[in-house]
Length: 279
Image 1 (spheres, rainbow, N blue to C red):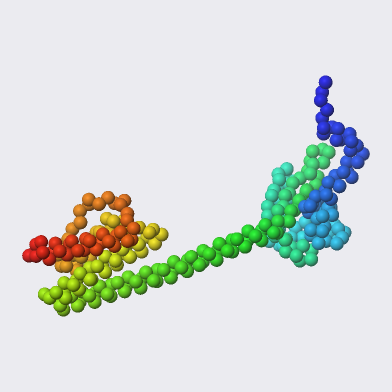
Image 2: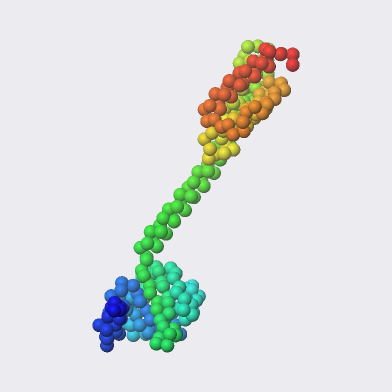
């Protein structure tokens, strides 16, 4: 025994009333549903579609080319979708189209072909769903992101300017201290001024290392020590070399780098002054 086919049963129940049933389904849909002829002229629009498009009387748009209801910039998209429907394809897209009264609306549109009894596409079905609210929210979010990106860009420019000024300030203070140290060379004040300049130089080097990678909160210890040794060599007029014992991936925080720099500056300064003062 062949089980009942619910589709066949539905056809039996709808015998003689298929058109009325189809019309009821179309009118019950909240979407704007349109039927077009093969030339793209409007031949039907459901009741909810007329309301959504704010059209008082279908007669005012009957037989109108569907693209004429849209802004000119949508012509190519609509014509491509209708041609695809005639070829048996389904097209979906999102586009802007105001209502007949000029109310701005965004629509999610689906365009497909409707086959006739011979299996050929005799009509085009275009269904438009109002997605204005979701598009508006998305646009607001995009604008908010754009504003934040712009603020971050301005902040980066400002931070770059601040870093540049801090670097110049460090350089000016170090140069001033070393000039004063040369004037006081041979006395206790000269040594203290050199020590002060070296301590500030360690902080300046930490700042420089952080400035090389603003997104990072730590510095490469090997790069930092190498740059600091170069500064100290110039300040102390002594050849200072750093071996490769430090691993290249060893990173420390800015505070740790400053502390290590202070210790190194003290040790190197003492070595130059006291360990072998004749070299």
